[in-house]
Amino acid sequence: MADAASSGKSGKVVIQNIGLLLSGDIDQPILDADTIVIHDGIITAVSKAKDCDTAQAKHSIDAQQTCVCPGLIDSHVHPVFGDWTPRQNQIGWIDSTMHGGVTTMVSAGEVHLPGRPKDIVGLKALAITAQRSFDNFRPGGVKVLAGAPIIEKGMLEQDFKDLADAGVTLLGEVGLGSVKAGYEAKEMVAWARKYGIQSTIHTGGPSIPGSGLIDKDVVLEADADVIGHINGGHTALSEQHVCELCEKSSRAIEIVHNGNEKVAIAAAQAALQLKCPHRVILGTDGPAGSGVQPLGMLRLIALLSSLGNIPAELVFCFATGNTARIRKLNCGLIEVGRAADFVFMDKAQHSAGANLLDSVQRGDIPGVGMVMIDGIVRCGRSRNTPPATQIPVEMP
Image (tube, rainbow, N blue to C red; front, side, top):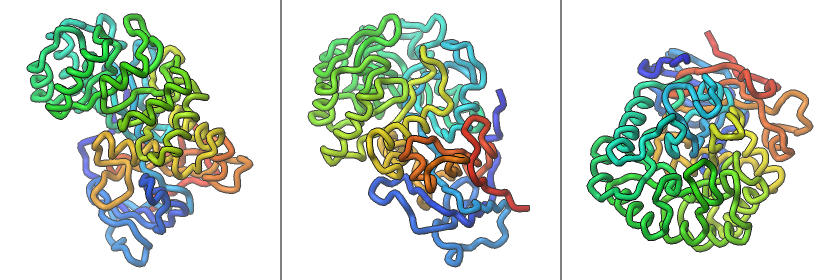
């Protein structure tokens, strides 16, 4: 369980010779720039090389005309402790997912902990412990935002204040615990929102013992901040009901890898038709019964672009800037002041695509040549993606 140094500073880092710069901003997904300058993990310049101060860099990277994209943000994971998941008894899943371009993960609840406490004192203690644990330990350098309690019957407003005062900022999936009625969930979601805690609701059929069906009416009444796995995790509501949720709710539309693929495409297309693509965010909903998918985010991006007929540069925004804005994260966008979290990609070797974006729109996942978190290189050529046609080079 390697813990890449997360406390060290990157110093000045210069990335040059970028062939394609994806911004993460759905209003301007491609930037006319070829150079990024970083100071101590924060972006300080994005422009053409001639307009940037590239002198006296501690580290320089030649992107070799490959694509640089904000690090992918997995909006829906179920971590436990460390880089181990008891759901599949697998060690190293977070580090392995970093090799798939993911630099940030957001917990939807630490539900797989053996013996997970369901009493109010215990669930609060677990959330606080998980939040502290992943704040101190970053497998592969990945930022895991954990500590997402599963709400249970009997919780009072004071409990949400206690959680917020302790640093908890997320609720786990509403509906995985004993609170399943819309009116109960609505009251607790409102308490959470009052104290700055963001909520996600389970959508669709049951996924684990103890969970149940959360239908469109419950989702609409609860009014959680994120419509969690709108395409089911695994079992989805009907396409009609999913499209109704997209239309009647103004909340985030979360599509996951471990859901219904057909409904995933329908939800994304509905958001485009409703002219609210900024609401779409992506996650894996892993680890799950279907396993751990280190390339789940890239596979979902390729699915939505190819079968959903959505330009690849827009789908990458679903997985980066959209999520950053909805989750209020200082990453996911390539702009001055944001965290220097990047994935360097190129089309996979021998892909039929003419370039990276074309290959993704044909359904191929890209090759990852490097991942950087806080301006520090966390891996070179990915051990999990197909080999990239070209990879960046660290300069001496």
